Length: 213
Image (cartoon, rainbow, N blue to C red; front, side, top):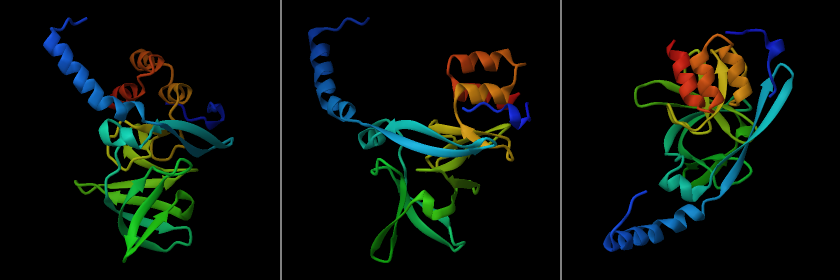
């Protein structure tokens, strides 16, 4: 695996009339939820040896979150603020703000919101007792959702989520945007099967195969 950061890239089924009628009814029931889903730009700024690189990733808007997109559940998060004060709060990540996600929680009877820029870190303990750490980026937190030779990061605090936006070479490498160029850089030139998956833009399959080897 390469380590020289100076080379880092910036980076046909026929239907009876009865079945047709049923299909149309189902389509009418579900189409509004799909067609009204917006794609929200989620910006992340990631440090590299050449300075900060900002990437914009488009994620599904709230209608898709409920039906077939990413969902943020309510968890107890351990929060460290910019001033180093730390506390725990039960809340969920809010996607309603199109500019930046926030962590919404209650303090007494007051509903409060924290933004990535307010924090040094946000983490939670998974059901199997593992720490799922999150670091603040430009408009979201990047949670380390899967570990291996290549770690995976997501804007969701969910282990092994498919919504991966950033990757890292081991635990000490620079966190970088998940792109074809960056992934090819990390896997090197000696793994034809992994490279083939990357060229087909099957990034998560490529990472899984690479981590297994």
